[in-house]
Amino acid sequence: MTPAPLEAVGVIGAGAVGQAVSTALVASALPGRLLIASRVLDQAVALAADLEDMRHATASPVQPEACDVEGLADCMAVVVAVRAAFTNTHTADVRMAGAAANAPVIRALATCLRGYQGTVLVVTNPVDLMTRLFAETSGCPRVYGIGSNLDSARYRLTLARLLNVPAAAVQGHVIGEHGDGAVVCASSTTVNGTPADVPLAEVRAELRTRPGRISSGVGRTRSGPAGAVLSALHKALGLVDGTEELTCEHRGDWLGIPLRFTSGRPVACLPALDTDEDAQLAATLTKLRSAYRALGCPAPSSTLLETT
Image 1 (cartoon, one colour):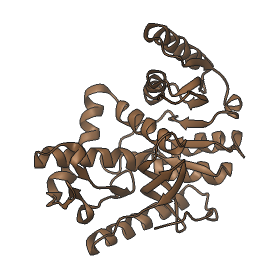
Image 2 (cartoon, helix red, strand yellow):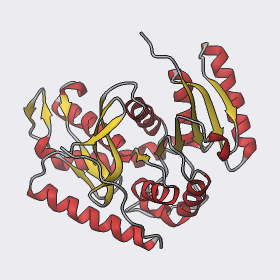
Image 3 (spheres, one colour):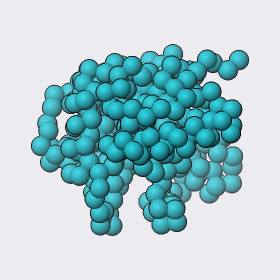
Image 4 (cartoon, one colour):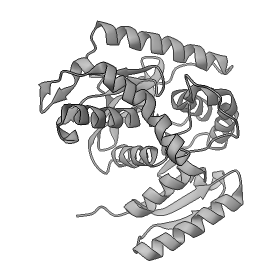
């Protein structure tokens, strides 16, 4: 039986990713209402109108509406998909290039939603930093970033292609940073339940170049992030149980790790790492701490997740 639609889900941002997320939500029939907020109200109104057309063409039950950020307070979940206007000239650490430009926008949104008790999914890059910034500015108890979710999906897809097996046969994670500091957990990866011989050089090359190829071809990665959001929402809102790789607070740091959701309750389930992977993760954590301090907003850690 299909579960009843949730009362409302909000999306902040009417750009490429916000549009893709909103379209996926209308197509999925997940929320009863979809509230869209944007710094430019006319964009939110236009996107809501376009989605209203889609709703009627597909008989979707989702009702799209434009609103301001304050109007999202009663939503079950809010997706943050904003991006400041800036020119990214980085050829390495590409996602990290948006930190200084996006931080004030995220801080302002988090201030508007201070005390919000629903689930927040952050898409804005650099997603690990922006997730922490939103959580510590807003005080919201359930804030996650979707970067490692997308990285892990790309990893499983790539490995399946390289090994000529179905993607569903691959179990493995990418953790740490959504960016150059991503850690491929090859030592714990399995195919059909058996430890896999992972061609790491080929895997890393594909994970490094795939986003750029997509952006060069269509201007922006959008469908992949939208899919990661939709999958994470189903778990975080307790519609289905399962594991998602999401940015969250873990042992005093904010990084992407696997979270096992049961009825919407997350438990961290970090895989065992070999010596090289452990060293890579340590270097990534140092990088993320330094980058967060550079934003000028050090803050105390929040409550630790239970781990297994």
